[in-house]
Length: 194
Image 1 (cartoon, one colour):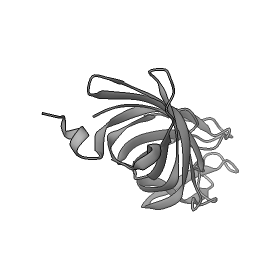
Image 2 (cartoon, rainbow, N blue to C red):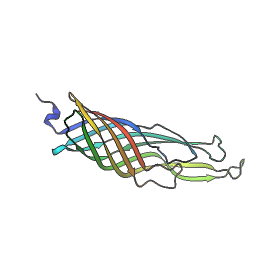
Image 3 (tube, rainbow, N blue to C red):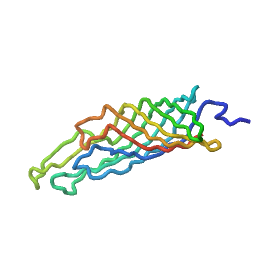
Image 4 (cartoon, helix red, strand yellow):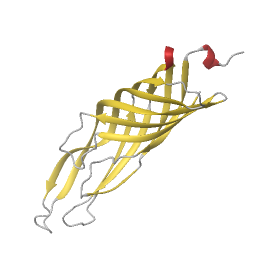
């Protein structure tokens, strides 16, 4: 009897990885970034001549610490952002004479985020006149954008392994938040699937 994948033009699996770019734009008052992992399932519909449609549901956890740049006092604010990225990608795989198959992907990226830095209030403390203290709020919402990438995959028995470098751009990120989110994101992803 043939495996299920030979009968149906579908594939599925799990992807995980890490972001290679900063969560926030470079600024003197953003001191650290952590929680940079990505993990989640994906599904793939195989089409003729090496094309396929791929949908991912990737959970990302990100964080940064904002501190008072003038006084360098420990009156810092910590941000933790959780997001679900749902890219819809067109994938093209290329046949080669080797075991590895290179591929490219491109498509639309949607992201729902919670804990996004919102409006920023700058206040002057009584103890240190003239030194700003940052008081921020957070928000949730959808960000829309594009995703492009490429990588290689290979198959061992019924398992497919892949390594991918992916760039995402989210265009509707507010420019007046502190810290400011980086609209350009690059990450390395490893996939295991059927």
